[in-house]
Image (tube, rainbow, N blue to C red):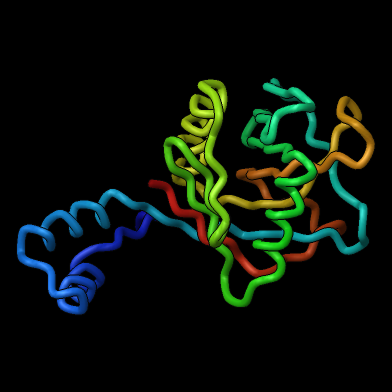
Length: 180
């Protein structure tokens, strides 16, 4: 059974009827919805504030002045967000009712209603790597990590194929990942 769920027929038929679109528009909408994949990612939170695992060995595209720094390790990828972007992400991921959404497009990153445009070619190539990793056919888990190479208090949003340690993390509300 595929982990990916394709939006199609029922959604676009309802959408087209509701907005009185002609049949050619319905075909376009169907093509759009068929190209959008989503999956549910298990999220975890540390039992105690400030606790987290070490990210481990990795390669990094890191600069402190960037909004997003990208890390990749064996069976995991991570994002380090700037302080302003981290505050906005916390507000969107933790302060909303329902399952939060993370949408990855070629030129942007969307967290619920907040859209962050990617600024340079390094971000665009790294989001392609992240999308490829996230669309691999295994269960994915999201939790926070740290690493001693980065400034004190830096947290790495980690997407991993393995669950974090049960002794340190508890499962929380999942995340809906949309890949466009």
